[in-house]
Length: 132
Length: 428
Image: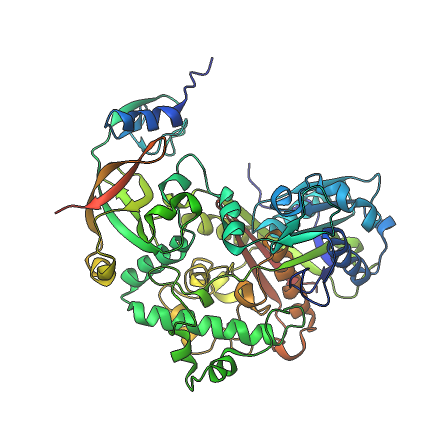
């Protein structure tokens, strides 16, 4: 019997507890963030929840001036690609950036960032902001 | 064991493509539904192949967003009668904006397996409008660009990718920032290269009778707006930024249209046409793009590598023409290098030097690209394959590549992400 669980719901539910969680493969030690049911590295399916460091590096970004309606309230905002300390990469909103200083941010890439859990309408999601 | 070989060689023997425009406005298309558009492309492909529907064993229809844009699924039934395929095998499929490139693969595999001899594969999309609720299919109303993109972003994974505030422009800017950092190119030069790529695409579109959305080159358009230098126009408010780097003229223009092609077993191709085009390789790969942290995407590299291994070609030596998926023009810089059309770090300069124009030594996207021929979602890849076939046959008039290409590569990227690469070679 496959031991499936509602991974997506659980990931978002952990944000409600203030935790940034991922999965760690019990066979090879690779991380899955966000969580999926199969290890990308060794293809094993025995994975366990672990708390992530929340630390990573912003490696690229863009200004999103015209987001889809669900994100209109944030416009314009910076959206970026973050490589986590544990290895996986994820793209999401980057907060705490002066929109007039995008060139400066680009010159500083890669930039250390840390996770910040954000409240939205009915759920919390993960964003990042530069350290310091 | 992976053999990367077809059990039976397969050739394209016919192609068809409608003008790309807007069924609410464009004179050639006005009043038409998806049925007439698909039939137009399919019948043209059959005529090009010198056969009739009775000789076609099966068909595929790519239709990326039928429920949103056509209030319809079962697209196979929607068109079967229109193309003479009642009671024959017919299949609807989609891999988003790479659909009709994938459709070539489906058709080729059907023939290579030995199950069928002749298969038609086409695509249709009507992006500018949708039917009125509960009314016949020809009664349509406009769909705003914002609403279209909102629905199109159902192509983004809704569990993890979309909820972070996903921006399509990010796919362009992330890759270009990685490229600029890796090769020490200034963002100013990257912008110049994007502008040059858009200017080259427009120059092609003006020479492509199927590209109806534009009639003048960007330099002429600039002059009309009071700019003596087209580069000043390209960095003005007429070309607003859509991201940190990308501007409006670096992005797709949405259009309506249909495309189709017909393949058959190579050993019978000469029964139909004097100019078959052999399908010698293909590759496909999928991912979610937040896994891509470099300028050159792993998912594209995988698809290109599969295709080249199957085709047994050296991309740096053997490719005469390449179409890359230019719904965002970063691909003229990044994908062309991933696909081995240019050496790493050199494409941006080649674009600025005019080498990627139809009359340059490394032509790209002679349709006018998705910027200026326009982007008809699932139909566009087929238009781009049809263009490659016509270039290889020497039929492209005043945008003809000289000499006609012997080997062409068509790469497409579907939202989500799906990459499909096809390699074509003129039959000898």
